[in-house]
Length: 179
Image (cartoon, rainbow, N blue to C red):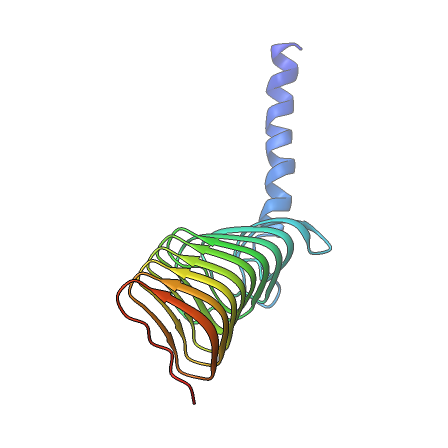
């Protein structure tokens, strides 16, 4: 390929790639900014795209509505994130959503504002502000503010504010209150 042809092709290619990316930068309702590489909602989304069937990767979750697949986030949310993650939720700090259904892995914690179902593994804690069921492993604690059922393993304490059907396993203290 000649230098002249390359000199003409590169600017055109750059322009052709930049225009679609800019058009997909935000949703019409003004929520969720990112690079949406999905087709009919399926595929790869980088940034805070609200609905994804596939892979959603971002720094900090916001505007989450529904992810079916993998939700990969580096840091915890600034505000209430909402939404549902079905599949694999992975976070360097703390994957967080209203409902976490499937496998949730957090370097520091796993946090469900509502329902936590499946397997939760948090470096320090696994927390559900609603109901919790499945297998939960927290370095220090597992906490459920609603009813809980399943196997809970924690270094310090397993706590349930609601009715419990669990096999608690803690090194120093076991707490399972029934109401």
